[in-house]
Image 1 (spheres, one colour):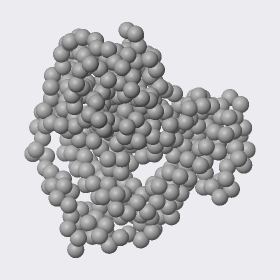
Image 2 (cartoon, rainbow, N blue to C red):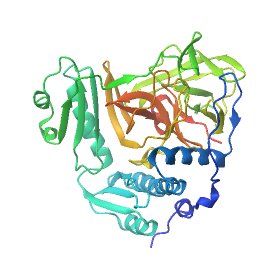
Image 3 (tube, rainbow, N blue to C red):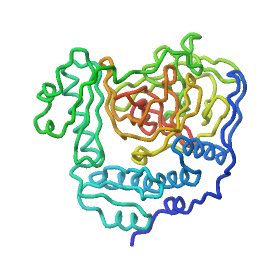
Length: 396
């Protein structure tokens, strides 16, 4: 039998005794107060508590779901790297007591079935398309509709949908859904479920009083993650649509100038990065009252449907862990600008000025806010920053 990696078996051995069970979180101080630096244990404790409360879970149930995400995510990441033609994705059931699910194209490879059995993961194989094939089909549908001149389009796919592509469009002059379907490639049209919305379905959340990054003194967006490029230059990210950002606020200290480096709004998300005259440390604001070390970057293949992820933006100014992943790869067209490979959550909590703010859990970076698409929050994946703007998230 193939040997299970030590990192996966270590996750499976986690117990609640590793985490404190007292109240989590801190009172939000004034914006000019210096934040408290959290330990890794305090960070994880807070996010587990913030995850449990809106779902009516116990702390033990929140920890179980976190452990499920870690276990299935690691195996999914390993499969995506070694056999991308078989990998589709992973999903967490609504009940933390149920086993996580790994979806595969065709017959499950023997080593995957063996590891999954040892780890308590349920395999759903025999699916017709790999993740890469599903993404390619979804992009083809999205682009075909975009060529019709529609202003707002949101599209994605279900991991277990047998290849179904879900699309919502909004345009005051858009034809009916049955007419739009005739514009699609014939080999894909039968697999598309398309609806026409009567109100806007997508927007970029910028220029609304976020206190984190500024355009000539005007609060506009939120910084995301400190990053580094191949030559060792460090900087900080925000959303690609946050034009003109040239200042960053260091809470309790002062305001620093930023210099623009590069921007991407396209197939790898919506992100840009800036540099200052200082070395940007591998740290992030989990809220205005707390600062955390960035110790890990979540691999894209490690993100599971129904996984809980937290967000913080300077405009809403409250750490929120109430949402779960709805779709691991969606495309979005807003005002003619196409974005792809965004992660879509199952609700809306971010507001104007939160754009660029980090999505995280504990001390791990997942991505940065774009806005909403299909009526739901979406973020750019931090693991794709290298492809988008040539940088990687700094970790300690």
